[in-house]
Amino acid sequence: MASVLQIGSALIYSNALVKTIRLRPKSFTCTVVAKPVPAGDESSAVPRRSANYPPSLWDHHHLLSVENIYAKGKSVRERDLLKEMVRKMLVDEKATYLDKLELIDDLQKLGVSYHFEREIDNVLTDSYQKNRRIIRTYEMEKDLHTIALEFRLLRQHGFNVSEDVFDVFMKKCGKFESGDDINGLISLYEASYLSTKSDTKLQKFIRPFATQKLRDFVETHSTKEFGSCDVQEIVVQALDMPYYWRMRRLATRWYIHVYGKRHNNNVVLVEFAKLDFNILQAVHQEELKYVSSWWRETGLGNQLHFARDRIVENYFWTIGQIQEPQFGNVRRTMTKVNALLTIVDDIYDIYGTLEELQLFTVAIENWDVNRLDELPEYMRLCFLVVYNEVNSIGCDILRNKHINVIPFLKKSWADVCRAYLVEAKWYKRGHKPDLDEYMQNAWISISAPTIFVHFYCVFSDQLSIQVLETLSQHQQNVVRCSASVFRLANDLVTSPDELARGDVFKSIQCYMNETGASEKKARSHVRQMINDMWDEMNYEKMAHSTTSLLPQNFVETVMNLARMSQCMYQYGDGHGSPEKAKIVDRVMSLLFNPVPLD
Ligand code: 0FV
Ligand code: MN
Ligand code: MN
Ligand code: MN
Ligand code: MN
Image (cartoon, rainbow, N blue to C red; front, side, top):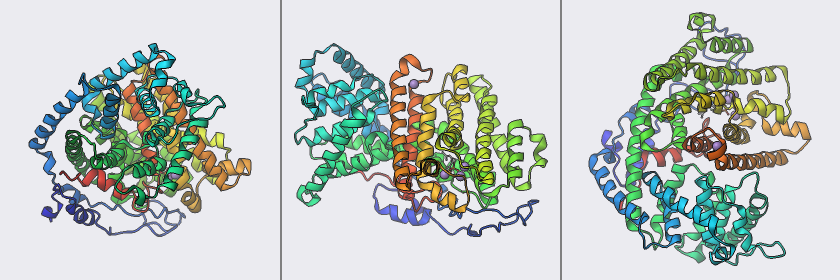
């Protein structure tokens, strides 16, 4: 069996792997409503809900037997040789300005820019300073593609360039002119997603214009007409979701494929990106083996039959937040936090009675292991694992960073449990909040603020008490916005099932109830809220160097959670029903199937 699982460079292996890894069935299925497997001292007479979540698709023993040829030193040595060749391109004096911008864009999209952060920063800082000095006429000489690409790259790196750079393309009558420059239009469309709440043209005017132009392009150029050309594929992909919103690693997997097909591609760059992708995949696989073993040892997946058993998906979320090889410890720790949050959320939303949930909330608030026996039996193991894991994270941080963060960690658990409890009470009492009241609780009950307190503690080398306090007091706007995107994206796909099995009104229903709007209108309102949250995050990011305490790289991981939620919930509930929501294919392509080398 192991030989089948050996991952070679050929894609042929992948199908065998899918079948072997996705081994079913488990010994149980959760299909019974109001008739749970008795668990200890809970009364079997109590009617309980069920979410009918499918069992895990991934087999632990098969996961452990995955071997990867890219884990060997030879691949790393080859990759490092290519890396130095790429570095030379970045500092090449003969390259034009546009060449450099396009190279930076390619490096980012190919997922390898983390090797050249200093060089990239130098090019962009230089460009920003020049831009501030230039006079308007110089702007006229650049084409739409160059201006839009430069604008996006600079804003992505936190430089505050004005949206007015696009004014030269506006006619006097206020209409935008672009001709049929498809590359320029794609770049303009992508740039328009870097809008902030203080921009007036990008979201309201430029984005709809570019979107419509790209739609027209897709309609008038059938794939056949374009033959092997990639432009059609790129436009379709961009319209599906802009690059800026995409989960980074998935965008990389796709771009390696597209860039590799391009006729004028750089062969060194392609080989470098492929090798680096596969090497990093091997690193991720080892981490996945570790968290899968940890999960089995906790016993939670087996004992809490009503809850989601999702260790692979919980790990997958962390790749979306931070993918670079040196952050394995962050990913391992955050996978545990995600897994525990998922289980506790299910206790509150599905299985627990209000009285039991009140007991659990008090136990977490008091952080008192001596009162374990006051909890119903099915809650005890869960409480104890949360208590032990969180203390153990605190212990590691005390040892390595000499700060006691346990008060912050446990407060974040008390906060999320209280928010879960508020929803349970609203449901029980039939309270239907308006959208505002709902969101004030729901951006916390989606668990993101808890995630970020833990994330910051593990991720940051130099912990700031001031940052911890603002995170803990829910005062970081960028966290609130990212959490809101997570909440709204989740509601768009999970609320029909949640309401059907019995749950509080979610954002869509709150808005419908409050305004009398149709479901269609409510959904489009929620999507507009997601757009506005992005504008606010972009604003925060650019105000960063002067107004915020948060390190820039931490802000990026905060925004990555918004990206990851848009990925997990793009086609359905990727966390609850990963197969139906096409997440299994995404997991396979990032965690198990290597990119074929030429
Ligand atoms: C979302 O599911 C979910 F799984 C959460 C909030 C917990 C874990 C978070 C990560 C793995 C990142 P669900 O739709 O049940 O969430 P709500 O809040 O709607 O109950
Ligand atoms: Mn839930
Ligand atoms: Mn919930
Ligand atoms: Mn939900
Ligand atoms: Mn900031």
